[in-house]
Image 1: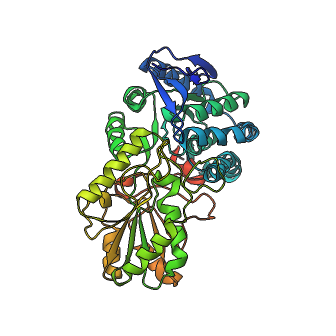
Image 2: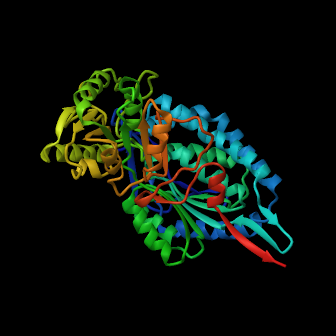
Image 3: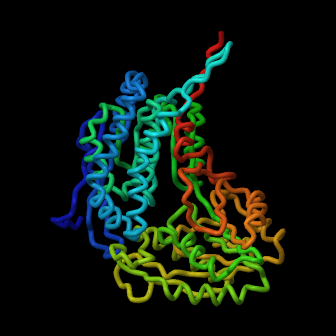
Length: 478
């Protein structure tokens, strides 16, 4: 195997408050998705390491579950403070190994770090106990939580699970994505400095097929939090059923963006691209299906073409870059196969297509692609692509648009545009989706619940809702 002397080697897990050597020769080489240069070698754990971590977390729960709210608030503050000190390094490493633009990564990193303060504040007013004349209802931590993290928002999902778990007095065993090893290592160094009690947070590197499988089947794991594909989510659901584990599953999406007749189409276009090409399309909430009035299809096509040619594709470290690469060769090839499928099945290719983006011999840069689709059953319309591919579908009337919006096995996000907010709200109420945004691709809402309907998942995460997800309810009667 070719070795690069400057390449970082990750060969440690974090178990019971200590960095422990990974006793395995199996490893993976990570490449910079922008340059294809080798940047890290990550060693992959065996099931023994996962079993050790689970037993340590189970032992730690016996005492950590009895800590006071004040103690847990102090831990949340310490983690926040250590992450904040290392914010720039966390951002730089995420850009390096994932390829998300620095603007997106900076915002996401800051939000992730601040979540520890948000949960700390929530703890002050969280209803752990409700009492009346004849009963007491108590919320307590669910126990040991197994967490499986995807590669498209590593730090956000680490913090999004750790903060509420600590708040409830739970302990965790986490399997991060092997493709985020550098950022995860930096995170662990911050975590260690924060002096979290031993065994409360355990992180094991490895593949889902190996250590992830142990995590979802182990009888000492009380709950699973998984973010990833619907296909993997179904397997996890099956594994968890053997021991009736609690589950929070945030799965795939094929989110519709609906331009209603009276929408300001020109104003909506930047939001359409912001959603569809978020993380270069590597986002579960991406608005990858655009529904437009049939008689305005040509107008929308021209607006899309005018805007897409202004997109700045390139080095994600640049502040002006809007579209970066796919995370690796495998994801690039997956997106290429979907683009080929769209062409072969007869969808109209408005722009983009097969091959690397113009001007890029190195790096996993996909051409930003738009298809016009008159058939809702095409593979590119129904399946999650996870790349910068937008499918435009014309509709006859608003009832037709609603049927088309709901014509998917997914139900994670949706976007509605209209000059009449009441009309947009009425339309949104009928969309089968866990989240609907009106006249925007982003929101300033403070940690609303996030999760999916249908095959987009189970449960909700976000602020106080994450705490609810990691709690059990006990009734004491008098």
